[in-house]
Length: 153
Image (cartoon, rainbow, N blue to C red):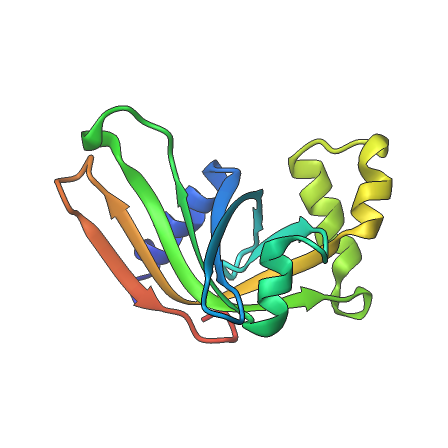
């Protein structure tokens, strides 16, 4: 994989704040939800959500998801975005929840008033297995894609 491609994706992920999370219910019904996210250096995505939300219930049955992030635009020549597919897990306190939640809260400037909601929320992590970047500003249909190993390499 070309390192510059990975760096392009990482920079794009840091420049945006919201993803569209696509999950599938046990009966096969699709569901999409917009969520704030935080990306780490390994391109893993994190978000907080209630365990009772539809997408969280779906992830209990099928822990795979697709996501998309894109820059808002009204001009097709400026469409840029990232699509990913991967596996999703709940991050526990033993696996670093505190550090990630602190970084998430810092990024979105979530003050003390959100602490109760955050304490009740689960922290989810998507480990991407497939990534596609697209950028119509380079040319119509410009894209590249790559696979990501579980170690983040």
